[in-house]
Length: 79
Image (cartoon, rainbow, N blue to C red; front, top):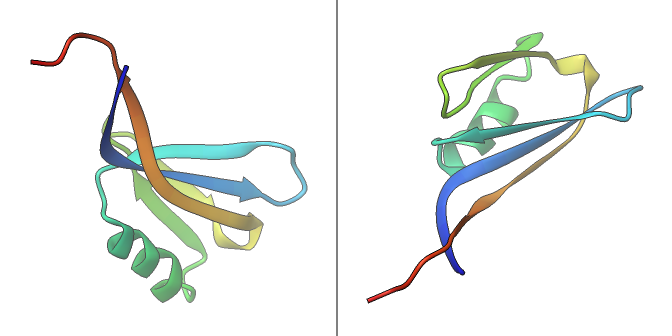
């Protein structure tokens, strides 16, 4: 098994619920950090994933955010 670091994975905790939202995105760590830090005046966070889906998340419901590299598993033989 070889690990390939390609996409960023964003995990967003939602207040007053046990669920998390996990989004795979092609944005860089810097772009994601800016998105969460610099748009605090907006009430809705808009984030697109790698499948072309769009997530609209109420900012006042976000309890935490974890941003990290997503590990995709590749099974096969290396040359």
